[in-house]
Picture 1: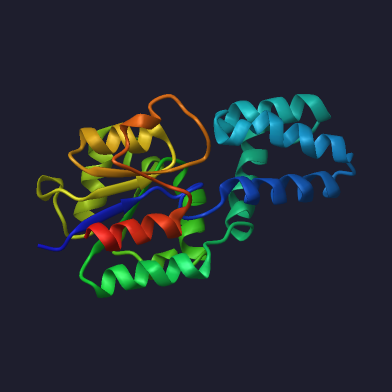
Picture 2 (picture 1 turned 90 degrees about the horizontal axis):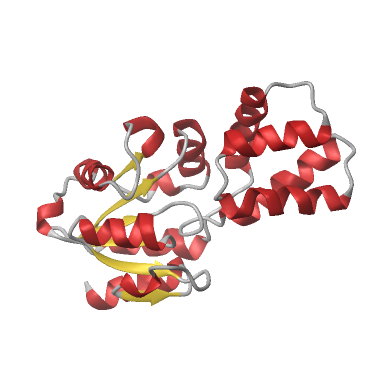
Length: 215
């Protein structure tokens, strides 16, 4: 039996917040906005916790933009995959896991075009066995069904156990535990439910080390 590990994408394998800051700076420069407007964009996004249709409704209203919300959101989704990256050390670590016999996958909430673009553009597509994106599957973490789809895409079954690695205590950690997986939480500061994780790691590279140690 191949050991299974499923990874979250945003702020786990890639730094979504850094990519969003880059997007905000570009957006402001293109439209002649002030530096304070970049800060407003980042603050209003609230680290991705605000639904993007709501976010772009606020953006459109604040800056009096002519484009409809759907078009602003579509352009954002098309651009963001070019602004995020996965550290080379993490890509190498994923390669090591697979060479050691692990089944490695990604389970992520989000729009299919945006998330698939990130996976493809960062080189992650070649380093994992499969992925499941909520926008493509019609079900989102913490629902067990997305974990099941992710495991199946990797040629594994949740019934055989495995690991979930992510930063969100509810969607990744509580969801992973409910799916029968051991969990590693990427520590991005105190959060409700943080104590549920089996282990805590400072970043994805540290999580990979834990997996190699406990695998």
